[in-house]
Image (cartoon, rainbow, N blue to C red):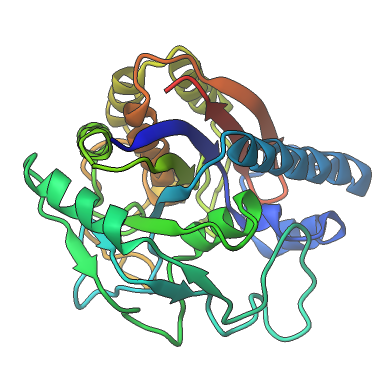
Amino acid sequence: MATLVGTFFHSHGGTTSLPPDLWRERRLARPIREDVPVEDDEANAKKAERTHEGFRVLREKVAELETDVLVVFSDDQGECFDFNNFPGFAIFVGERFNKSPRQRGGPGARQIGRHVDPGFTFNGHPELATALLTGVMKRGFDPAFCMDMPKPDRGLASGVIRSAEELTDYSLPIVPVMMNLYFAPQVTGIRSYQFGKAVREAIDEMPGDLRVGVAASGGLWHTPGMPGAWLNEEFDHRTLECLEAGDARGMAEHFDSYVIPDDDTSQDTSLKARNVTGMPSLGGPALGTRETCAWIAAAAVTEGRATTIVDYIDVYASPVGNAFAYCDQP
């Protein structure tokens, strides 16, 4: 049967790619809450260095565990789907997928970290993807599936691409599992937990000797571009405490029990816009912080196993909790 070798968790927001000397410029361009600390270029550079050290640790762990294929939980932010049809879960079962052919930030934009060229093609793994699709269907889920790229001109979900770029040698097959974690009403923490459990059971029953890794891409707390954006470090630290203890269900309950304060403008999803449906979230934080549910799904895959927290970086220039973790005790 297939063997689960480990789970890997990482953030993927803009500051994982943006050179730190541009972070203050980003802060000035965004309506951040007044009490959020202001840091200088030196402090930002140190936090960028820690971020990419986190990626390095995970990348080496993926290789050390002799991973044959990487399943990636992340969100689609309009690359594959749009408001005409937005599934809660979707699994890519095709042979190949590509990064967006458009340069992020426009032609000539500077980036740091590991990035393939626009339009680069990654390998899928149809056999494992199909096993996951049918396996979770037998367990009460009805995800959408993609045999081809829904929108080749936009590439696959950027969160999946960031895992492929930062955690692999670019040839490792990837099974993208896209979750609606950005556009309300999104999937909940408990549903993400249940989905991760179903994925683990599907992996365990797959014939063959595949060595399977599972990654979660996104989070933690962030509401980019929203007025009054801030960083709820207390919320993130509780999430990581549960993860470290192997308590995936506790992560889900912590997430879903959070009530958005009435005066928190950074999570106001009532006004319809390009990236806001105008519909309510079903409990828990909204917008980018919802990507924490990808972590919950991956944590459920190795529930009960202690997880190593590599680092948590409190970035204030565009408030986000950049975090990295892994579990190699499946």
